[in-house]
Image (cartoon, rainbow, N blue to C red; front, side, top):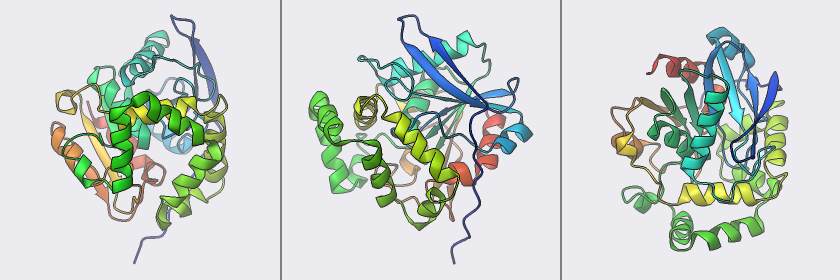
Length: 295
């Protein structure tokens, strides 16, 4: 018998800010939790802006300052025609420097996982938690495990990245992505996505994520589906993996992070038997508390 779905508590951000980067682009973000708390950066999922955070009460109790950034081309952040996993990591590092965020930690949710891992690979964070994270789908040990339709997408990104990006941009929208997410979700996740106010904040995050058009999302998808520009095996900072057994998404990790765990250095790895991909919100306290002990 499946465990009952936990109530999810989310609320509007307490603060928002913008940073003008060295090249004139704007990087926008929102914050929750005490301003003097331990800084944690949340790398959001596909097409999402910074509108959806975590339980404010959990952040207050753990003394965490959560920053959720609009990646370039999403929300209120300027687009970057040269965007890569590493350029986004560099932008986030500039934010940390500008705001004096010492001992920064990162959470990578879903498509945010490769961006969080790029931060870890660059030594820009003290530790990282990967939650329902997308694996490196083009990696030889992962690729054969993928459903056929996902392998087709990985092949397209690997063979002609610009065309893949353009093809995705031609069909993508906030409504399309929201529908696709629900279609790829199991009952446990659909129950979370349907909760209020979570549902309203999630829809807001997608609407804002596409406010500049589909280009930001299409670029992120192309980067995530391509071979990553760093070796996961070389990441030296602690990384902890969290997956839900009922995560039905074909574009996360086909083995719930087992291959990714083998590639990382002694990464603690939790596969929750009762959760789906939304365990970032149903197990926020455990995930954030563990992250604070790492590194």
